[in-house]
Amino acid sequence: MRRAFGDRARMVSVDSGGHEVYLAHGNACGDRLVTDFLVTGHRPARDAFCPAETG
Image 1 (cartoon, rainbow, N blue to C red):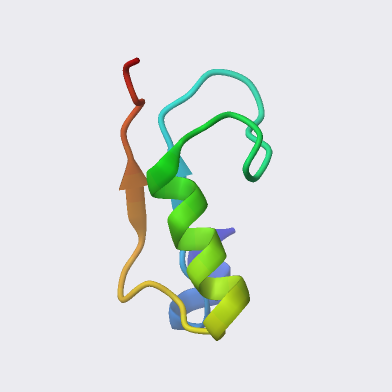
Image 2: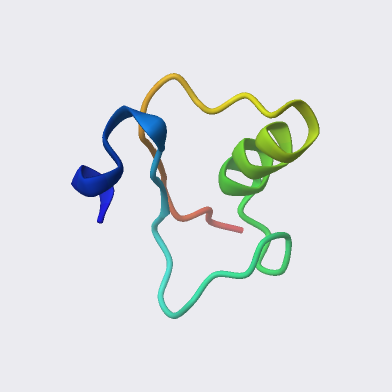
């Protein structure tokens, strides 16, 4: 799917089991990237990977 959209899209991956829900599981990296897009409309410069956060 990522290839089908080409440069029109960015993929943000979060290292976590199960399905992620925005702002529900406390991954600051993923939440920040999505919030930035929703607030400003700007996509990350490239695809992003957010590692699991340890507490």
